Image 1 (cartoon, rainbow over the protein chains, first blue to last red):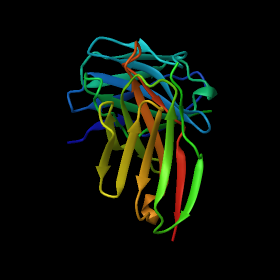
Image 2: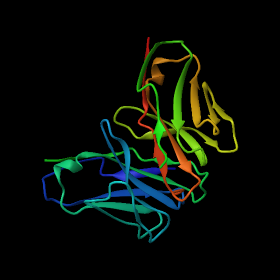
Image 3: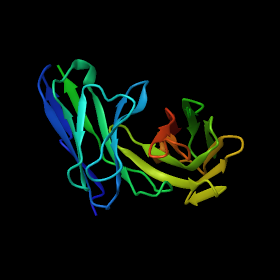
Image 4: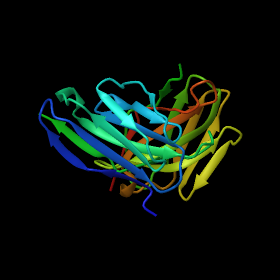
Length: 113
Length: 114
């Protein structure tokens, strides 16, 4: 049982380049989330999804897009990367029930030069 | 808006000591509270989940309590070990309109010295 898997784990981009982070979960969870974690800022919610085909904005959505075409996958895209998007990105998922436990992936470290 | 605070931001203790980490939240209307552990360069690992109807949860040397009325939770670690060194975060799920989302504290960095 892999849980929540993120790819890639590391990536270096130049300003203006685009990329996509993939999150896959094998627990049949409805809710999925993308967070970024920066020193001193804690975890900040970028986007989330409450089911296949749905997405919603979190606290810091600017510069990012997401898609949830399949229930098990949640993609985070950067159309034109900026140095301010240098961060560690975490995907998480949980069941529909509001009482559900949240599970995290191992993280993706992105550096934008 | 829900706010979650964890004090202290950092804690250093000698091996073998029992310790308590604190988590406070401003809105008591929650579904649950979850404690996580994060090792350097790693993701968050769930430690304990306490539902709003529960007062405490235990797992091994860990015991988490929840007092909704006062907006507080504590994570008790018994007989601490160097391997317990990590950042500990708490998060709550609100029972109000934003119940899809969790609100996280910024964590307590725990160092257990041999």
